[in-house]
Length: 297
Ligand SMILES: [Zn+2]
Image 1 (cartoon, rainbow, N blue to C red):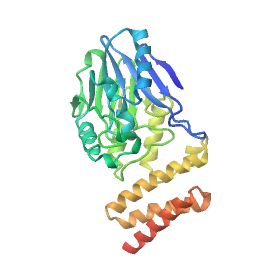
Image 2: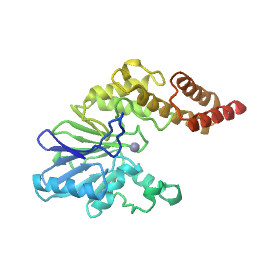
Image 3: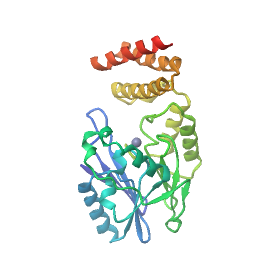
Image 4: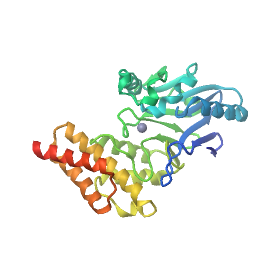
C-alpha cells in the first residue's frame, strides 16, 4: 500500500507502507517529491519500477510533464533501486556515493541474491560538499555524513523541509561505525538549519524533536534512556539496540580493539540474559564471538 501526503505548497511524500514493516514495527519507505518551476526533485530512488511508474503518474497529473532530478542519499541498495527507472534523467549524488556504488557492486557474488540480477544505473551528476545548481528552485543537496560516510541530504528552503534520509530514524538511528563524532556533527548542523519539517527515509514525517532525540542517543551512546521506549514495543526496541551494539562490537573486533569489542558483546549477553530476545542460533554466535575475544585479550 502506498500513502500520499502533501507537504507545504509544493511537496509530496509517497510512503510505501508494507515492504519493510513487521507486525510490531511500522517502517514505511518514503520518497519526497518537490515540484519546482520546471523540474521535479525526488529524494530518493527508493522503489522498484512498478511503484515509480505510479509515483510519476501521480506527479504528472498534479503538476504536468516536467524534467526529473533524482537524488541518491547514499549507496545502500534500497536507496538506488529506482535509478534504472530514471536512467534518461539527471541522477545526482555525492561523489563518494557514486564511488561506493561502483565499489560495492564490483563483486556480484557478495550482493544479496535478490539484487544480483539488477541493473545498476550510476548517478550522472555529482557534488563534493554542496550542490547549489538548483538554487533557482531553492533546493540544495549537501554532504551530511552519519548513517554512512557518504550520506547526503536535501533541503527545500522554500518550505523549510529537510530530507534527512537514513540519518534520522525513529526511535533512534542505526549506527554503521564506531566513529560517532561525524554523525553527531551532522545532527547538530541539522538542528542549526531553519528546517521545520524533517523527513526520514523510514518512518513518519516529523520535525526537529526527533533530530534532538537521535542526537541525545548518539551523545550518550551506549547508555539507554528508558523514556526512549516508553511507547515502543520493548522487544523490537531492544532488538534495535542489540543490532547497534553488534555493529559497534564487530567494528572494534575488526580493528583489534578487543577490550572495547568485549564490552559491547557482554552488554548484548546481559540484555539477552534478562529479556531472552535472541534466537538460539544468535546466542551461539554471540558465545563463540566472546570466546574468540577472550582468547585474544
Ligand atoms: Zn541506509
